[in-house]
Each structure stands twice: as structure tokens, then as C-alpha cells.
Length: 110
Length: 114
Image (tube, rainbow over all chains, first blue to last red):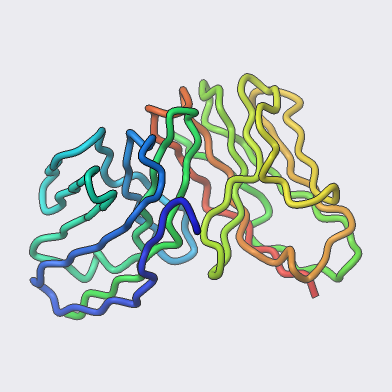
């Protein structure tokens, strides 16, 4: 079992839709959780960063962590074609080791 | 403000050849990471350095892989001899401090071994 599991999709939504991207993780020692966005033929770029449980909002993006169920979510409101990318979740354990999900491919159709 | 710079962007070579990938981290960053990305396994950490010293190379798949960081502004990842299963996108990332600081990725080297 991988440390972080992510549905690869692909996910296709119309412009303006609310998008929900999800990951699960196996290690209860994980404390920090991140979402990266990766455009085609580019490197991942940090999108959201949260510590422990709870929500964090940044513009149209909301990251949510539920440590009781080991569930990580990213919500995108009013999705735009420019949001089309692969989204990777990542978790960090107490030993400062990063674990990435395999990524979910998202396409927002104009 | 230059980001992480990787070269070459694309590499196509025959099985058995030596491959060298290069990375220039962001100036002032003291951590450097090498990752490999494939469709099947996603992003995998191969090795990381702190202040030019290799800290954890447990992700290096085989002895055919080696990495060096001779100074704070340059690192190489070498595969010798290369095999078709090494085909992947290799990313270099750097950060100011591991863990709580975000990793900044380069645009990767797309490697194809024929």
C-alpha cells in the first residue's frame, strides 16, 4: 500500500463547476499536507499547504484535512479552463519525508 | 528571479549508454532533491542533499544510479548503464529548509531509453 493514494481520474468538468479532488493517506504520523499543481511538461508548483486537521482557503481554492479518516481534499470553486492540470497531494511525516500521490488529471471545459 | 534549472529538457539515448542529468538549484536554497515521475508510480524521491551532503539515498533504485553535488549551485544525477525501464521524467527541486518549506521544482528532464 502506498503512503498516499489518489484517484488518477481523469476528471472533466464544465467551466464554473465546483471541483473536488481527494486523497487518502495511511500514516497517522503525517502532520503537514500539501497540494501541488502540475501543468503539462512543467514541474509541480505548490498550491496549498496545511498543518494537521481543518480547512484552509485561498481564493477559489480550499484545502481540507480530516485526520480522523486520513482524508485530504482540495476544492476548486468557479473552475476555469486555466485550472486544467494535474493535481498532486503530498504528505509529510515527522521525519520530514515527503510522500506524493500519483496525481489527478483535471480538464475544465469552456 | 531564476527558478530551478534543469538540463537537458529532453534526452533520448540507447540502452547501455551513460546518462547525466544536471540541476542548478535556486540560489540560497540549502536542500536539493531528485525525483523520478512515471504514470504508474507517480513522483518518487530518489535522493536529497543538505548543504551539498547526501542525506538519504534510499530511493535510488540501483547502483546504476548515482548523484553528486560538488557545490551549492550544481548537482548531477547519473545513470550508467541506462536501461529502458529508466525512462521517466526526472525532476530536481530545492528548498530553503526541508519539511516546512515548499519545494520548488524545475521543469524536469524527459528521459527516453531505447
